[in-house]
Length: 263
Image (cartoon, rainbow, N blue to C red):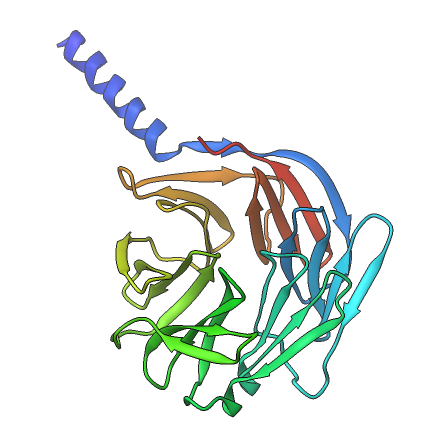
């Protein structure tokens, strides 16, 4: 009986340990600034945020700003290429391309396209093109911004795109049923899996995400459906950004950067 009791307690302790598995993030530094939302940082170490609908870029020595009063609210900013930023104004069906000093390179109003486009998602793709989710046709396409040509690459699909993200080769999104899908530049759509409920989410690989639920940050991998709590100092926070093993936690007073190594 004594041996059985010890064995039971051993498995109970093991269960608790698995449920409370945490990764401890190591604090690097804190940057103070007033912002409404934090976008992220680029490969050159510059930080991007929005204050009063002005896009602000800041490094250690200089600050740049871009504002367009006629287009109103900024919906999304793509930082993939710091020399060619994509600023999306969904309410005006417009994208603005900016250089590394936030000078306007090109403004694209999709309402003026020969093929009707109502863009509800967009980002930078490979080869002078933009990813576009055209909600009029419920299809994903590629827009060549040098030739002003749009090409649809998927069949129509049912379901609303909630959060989405893009890189040069893929457009990925999560629908209202928590299904995580992606589309390549040839139009092939793959369902990667189902993700947990979240308030904010960021994909960091083909099978891994970091997400916020309440005031807790989690790492989740589709491989084994494993969830791990990421522990850091802030008790409450607005958003986060992860890149190159650096985790930025945003509050309205600025960001705190942490080092975290994800296996």
